[in-house]
Length: 583
Ligand SMILES: CCCCCCCC/C=C\CCCCCCCC(=O)NCC(=O)O
Image 1: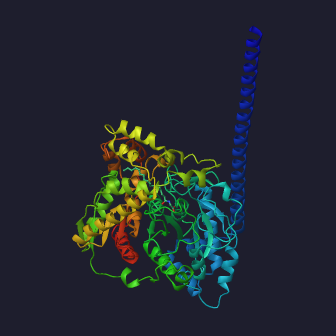
Image 2: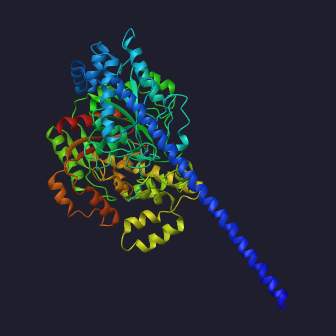
């Protein structure tokens, strides 16, 4: 009996040992493979970064000059506002090659300091040479060098979104916007940096690295069109093209102190742009224009709103730029608000609205207080739910699977991917202390098509309600904060997303909206921040406060908003604010 028992014990022991050894072997193979894959991904990212650095250096070497006359001419070119520069190019006073080289030299020098470029556009010089031999001006942007955000397709260049799996796939066609720009004579010359996946207000990815804010390098230039904003602010481009589903044109424009316009979706074409959240419903993504001043934005829009665009993308509403609306001089009636319930702004952001409001009133316009209806519901129940409706599947499978996750993206991934039961437990525990955070956590995940339809129906009802409120006050324009805070530190970007309420609201409504710098953070704003509690001094408020502390001197903008398809009217209000509140 004992022998049988021993035999059984021995055989069980042997099985356990064998099982443990096999499991350990499989586990170490799995871990080894993971580590190996990670190293390969890292290697691939670094190789691409090195190649792009070299390509940019080659461009720099080819244009740098120590000839005094050329250098003086380049300084003169770089000092011209876009409308004058494009006029001189059309008149033949300047050549496209001369202008391109001035901007190539400046852009690469700016890049050396803040890492805002991803790659040079390889055929830029040939394109400029072709522009110079044309018999007559090719269009409104004849010979104007333009910068393009990384997620726009340019034939022959990979659109990477900051993930390595796209590095070896060059685009086979230009995005429609790029095609139209070329038809207008423009010379796309550099692509600009983005955050990995685009769904961030920072500007860093494992392939091209982190972009710094040219005004204060300890801060983020904003995202996702952060490379564009930083380059334009640094003087390396006069006209750039970005995209915006949650403020990606407006946030970086604010953080760097330039102007940016997010049009109504389908006013300009989004064909050939890679999206961070393809298929998302109800919070609408659209390309946008970025520049140092409003006249340049208007020129950029005018150059795009032409029959070529309407033919290349029949989904675009065929309405050309209405110059008469942009140049209209009649007094305007403008609604304004300084705060949203969901995320009260830090002192400088609210002060900027009051400053612009008073200047507009002095100039003869009528300013009317306007309360956006139930913005907490709009931001939490609609924007947050709709933008995270797939519970992070696109985020984790399409973008981040087998990739290195960027360090600045890590702080926000849980918002997209946290399991439902964990959200519920946390929301229950946190509700008595931090009701806003509990509200965000407790939002029901979208579990079915029926749920999605319900949210979309709520969104339609919300838009109707918003339009009714505007109509009651006879308003078709709004003035409000550009965001809940000025430029943040990159390490705080993932935990300050609540401040995007001011911009995402207009992606939800699909209204055109643009930002214009009007002031800078003052010592007094910084002092007032000490008593600022935001929504209720919850952990989100504490990070917003921490990141805003010491922001003295950073740009502060206001946001101008118009009704759908009224981009020209939105730009008109922006222009008026720019003229009345010069920074
Ligand atoms: C009331 C508290 C709410 C806190 C949570 C707010 C979370 C808001 C949810 C989503 C906003 C996400 C914004 C992310 C930046 C988007 C940048 C962007 O527009 N990217 C798209 C593009 O570049 O095309």
